[in-house]
Length: 471
Image (cartoon, rainbow, N blue to C red; front, side, top):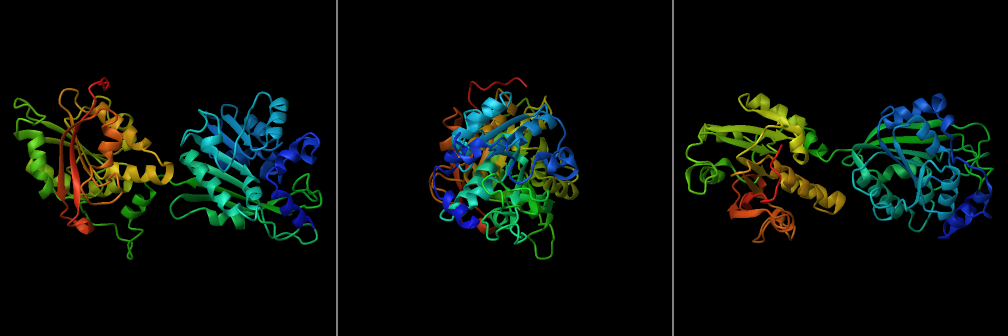
């Protein structure tokens, strides 16, 4: 009977609004924590939540989804006084009450399955939260039989978009293995149900999973079901995988049958194809960025991977002062072992002004695939070009203000295919609208790997004239 009532009620679109109304069961109750109260977590609660969040009291941003009438947000603020705690629920009645009873905290009406569009402006920015907490929200979503699984997947995708790189998602859930005398089995929530919606191969990393959080005896799951008293609950503490996690696995050899790191190789083009372009644009023609009186070319490669190009470049052009960067530490370590003469460092393409010396200016910045990788990340996670825009802005601030150029080998075209005649999206979608200047555009046939016989683009760009050049 309890199970049937639960499922029938949740099918009503206005169910939560009615329940949180002053005349509803939840509206008539005092503040109530579904599942477990803050101090019912192991060790009295505070230490458990500090460990789960992965930090002490620092200036962080925490989002609580499906907050209800819980005291959780208040307790979190007591624990992390320097943090900004933002709590949301889909019920306007619920949020209006919480704003009155907890006036010093932030509460907003928002949909957990559509956070990017229902959170207020300024709170819906991608990668802006250190921690997102769900205590029963996914369980409630999954209780909808018709669309619960799709809605749960939407919620998880929205959470991942809002979390910072390596940000944490804490899910407290009602387990399904209950004592039949005290609970109904078949409840559609619970960690066994929600676990299958997390892609732990690519998107998430499990930090901790606790399936035996003990509940006080006869502790009701909610005011709606005082006779439903689970014995245990589950907590899933997971971390968003950084966008380069697949590359780290690749360079470690995780994808190789014998777990061997990959041998040095080039993407798109070998040095043989690119050599005349380096000579033309770095040294020898009227279009060269280097004046005859200048003997040295300061050259930055962004996303060097494990390419042999740098070694070949220095052998051919000894006057180049080369710096190679990659966001993946495993790639840089392999390059250092194979080419000890190279100057290499770990750096994020989106934070070059932060990760490189403040006095650095480069005559040439070279990219063979990094912009494409950022396009793939933007498309799959955000559906925007935000990371590529940030990347180009960073490049514009490290190029020499008088003559610096950006050389880009790219394959990400407007139509999304790897070959054809359309200009790559880095120009049409990002660089051109931002005021960059196109000095040259060549289509070159690839001579390496699986890309052999395909055509890619080679662009020569100058940053916008208005770009700030002070570092």
